[in-house]
Length: 306
Image (cartoon, rainbow, N blue to C red; front, side, top):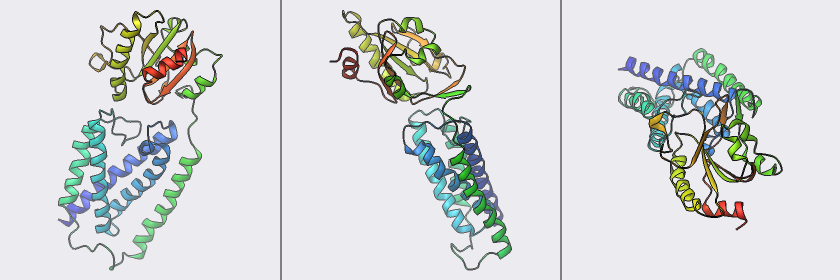
């Protein structure tokens, strides 16, 4: 039983170490875009050293029962977070950096099995807190490198934040569009229907196929389009799909939709919170919104000052 507990804690610890390493790679190579604190760059700065530190603790075996208890609590928390992401339809659990893994796979293959194994194979006969104390050599051999490693990683993460724009990716800042009112919308050059969007009044919705908020916004904008269609002050609508493009089963816009459709090019990776809604007049931005759809009143106020 004791050997089994050691193996289980090793497995749990290695999962945490690998996941931390992949998050470190992500945060050093691309910007972090999120809708809230819990998926933000600042939260990663807190999460990574805690997750990595717990992984090292579970593997090294110091104060085994205390480490086991924290590991059990941590994987219980992972179950709750991953389950929530699965229920909202998130494309990835976010556990492994740039590698996207379906939340339901992570939940069923890693989180739940590891939690159950930790719960079953407890460190029996171990005290939660010392005494007995570990051997000084063993303790120092683990503690000193760990206390050097974690602050060093934190320093590297803070001082090596990726730039907002490179040849491989770009962070979209909708606030810049609104402040450049005399210039054409900069995204036009990367959209395949740019010529159409440069003439007249347009409401443009940029979406991802795996975006739950986009799935809610598209039918609403379909209805808006129909209501404006016969109006003398007609507002044109366009749905622009952002890469990675979805297959036929993932498409949010019906093939029968009358709304103009287009695509943002996939020559680089675009970082933004979708849906993105832009109100254009002859290609110039009147209003823009990131992470939420503009209401009808907001669109009318932007377009006609009403």
